[in-house]
Length: 389
Image (cartoon, rainbow, N blue to C red; front, side, top):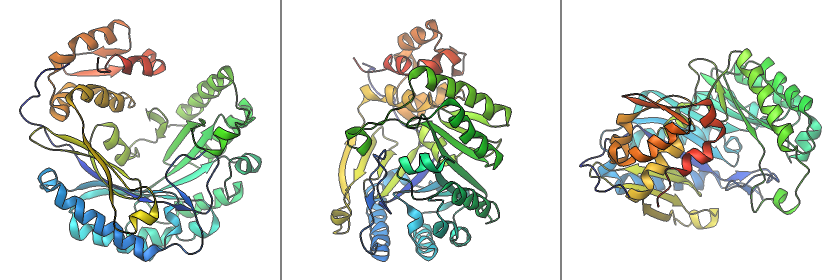
């Protein structure tokens, strides 16, 4: 579709994703690689395997890593806050022995807003964590129960206050809308309560029913499309009026508090990945781009079976993958990054770009592309333009 690749790729910033798969119980909407806690979690053994996994990747990708320091680390799950502060500190110290940290590295860890986990926030900061992301989801006890969450609204608010005084540079609240039997006013009330807590960052996203989840087998009654649109439209206004800037499809932040790790994902950056089911992407100067994933189940992973799958991103898929990521962001896309990070000439996508401009999905200047308000509403249609023939 695009002809020969250009001579070399420019290597983008490098991040690291760490997956900790255990949680107290599996939520009925969750399709992440998570496993309900049964007995004691093998924390120390798993940490040792994470380090061994990283060492294997560093050797495998040494031609790609070169002198790139880690731009960000994201510890996700599951529920990483089930691990002790000492364990997280050990993990970060061992990682830093192996890979240089950027002077301004962002280190995010996902956490439950339950009482026990929140009491560990100070310890996580001492361990090196700079940002915590809390899965609040709702401030309605009834809705939390229907989502299978183990915390209540008051615990969530207490956890936010602990995060505020813990020494973190930033924290995020995850909030859902379009919940089972949720009215417009209930959704907006959740949002008002979140805004009142003044988090630097809010991830506000619609509940979707994913395959192979409890909700897929027993679907709850969700708001219809008209109700969902009203929730988004009025909720977006609440957030912007409160000083939050939408910078990604479902992410809002106060100025200067965007999640740097997620920005690197959406900007088609590179990321190493360690832990059960973790997904990574690595670029090589000579032109290859590799995506890979790790063994999903803890039993196999704890036997030292780390790599599950690895494949090259073919030339025909690169434009779609690049724009699928970049157009989730509301910032302008520098044209030079398309060529530098995909190895494809802009001239090779001119027909598709012209059509996207014609449809008012994007605006084009000499140096950049910018998604329009219309394009945001028709993102799937915009991305389909770049699918390989």
